[in-house]
Amino acid sequence: MNDREQSDLGWSEVSSADADLAADPSPHGNDVRKENRRPKVNEHRILRLIHDCGPTARADIVRQLGLSAPTVSKVVASLLDAGFLEEVEMPEMQVGRPPKKLRLACEKTQVLGVVIAPGTCWVVSSGLDGELEESRMHKIRTPDTYEGLIAALADQARELMNREGVETLGAGICVPGLVDVSRNLSVLAASVPMIEGRSPTGDLAERLGIECVTLPAKHALCLAQSHFGENRREEDFVLLDFSTGAALGVVNRGRLLKGKNGFAGEVGHITIDPNGARCFCGNRGCLVTVVSDVAVAARVSERLGRYLDIEEVVKLARAGEIDLAGEIREIVYYLSIGLANVINLFNPPTIFLHARIFDLSDDLFPSLLAEVRRRSLRPTFAECRFVRANVNKQQGAVAAILDHLIESWAPRSDTHRRYPALTH
Ligand SMILES: [Zn+2]
Image (cartoon, rainbow, N blue to C red; front, side, top):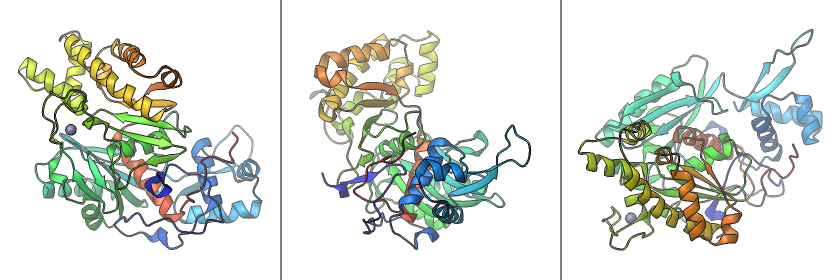
């Protein structure tokens, strides 16, 4: 695995000696912020500090990062100019004029997040702080055709972009399945097959006239975890997404492991039962055929003879109106095999789990962990923490464009470590 097969997460420090520009990630749209593509050490440090600590006064930046006041002034000016920061008066309990602080732009700047998924799609907008408000989260039923999908998403996006005095910097698009990152092309999406061979990135960028970037959900969720999650400072983790499909993202030393084309992490297609049900990939008994929100909802629907989505299944199960003992036993059995393999392969300190099936019963998670402990190597299991992911795909889409814009404007070095200089 070399550095070209990985991508950085979050904002971090770069070496000014590393003047080579990062490879153009082939985005689409108008990018006015890409003129000066050189690694910018202090820009990343200041963004990271404000991201982690919230609104910060210039004097505190000088003190915490050990930079000179003129350097901070110059870098802050460029960040304000690029629309990444804004300076606001923060009222405090003191006499006189409130001090000014710098924060991630959210009043005059926004980004869009687009989630393409079976059943329901989302278009949301947020400031660069990633805060999502209900009034700026639009939900639509997933249209039946690709043309209909792009038209509907563009309509919702335009509505969100129509805010006076607010500039939209770009849109992140989160899709199921495999995305060829070098061509921004969806190449496999069993749950939304209409996007296969298409480029929502290019088509939305063309309609909206803004920078767009697409990531598969497994990787977008990792970015969301890194930018907005409660444990956002973790540099090493695995995130497993068992919502519409079953896939994982691996973050190692602050870098996302993408594989040659961006396809890495398809844990859903490890064979879990050689004689099991036929999978859409052509094999039999893949993990994704038995464990995912969609797979479990489908099985319960079949048993009850009526269609239920996972939200309805969870609601009925919590109310004690349906007995899911058989399904839960099956989830624990198959998922524990998958998780034990992941632990043994990657030795992650933390595994974030993203799925609604864990809400089916209070016993499911403890039973699962007991089974994973039994199946995995003891020392590796002992070092691993299991945490429910507290981020969603909307945040993943927002994080995708945020990460992309900052990287386009101020590329990072391939050789840096994340958070090397921050001690708070
Ligand atoms: Zn498969």
